[in-house]
Image (cartoon, rainbow, N blue to C red; front, top):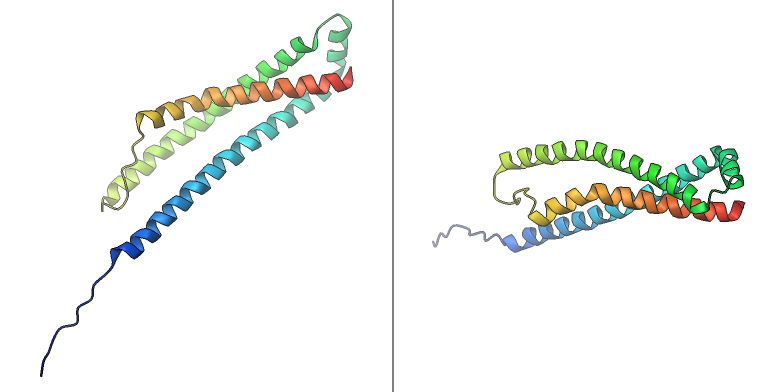
Length: 155
């Protein structure tokens, strides 16, 4: 009788391709989340700016009466929105950076070679640093265009 032990060959390519596909899907979901967050920011700025315009309608009428231009009024709203966007961005960073550090610590403890190190490249750190000015710029431009279009309808 010929007794041969059963041999099982595991093809790591199958489960590795599933892992790669899952990571690509997670990457696409992350990009979608960033885009939706940006759109939500724009929508929030538009809503709050229009609410501010409604609350300040009497003041804006007086400013127009004494000669203030639409550009001056829009600039005031835009600077306020940029400041609020900057403060919100700082608050977000205060939550995000410790979260990244905690994830890095947790993944570092796993250390079984499948997950890459959670290190940002210099481009990654520059991107993180640019979030604050981008939020302020988006808030500024959105508020400015909202005020200018609303004022052109009012006066």
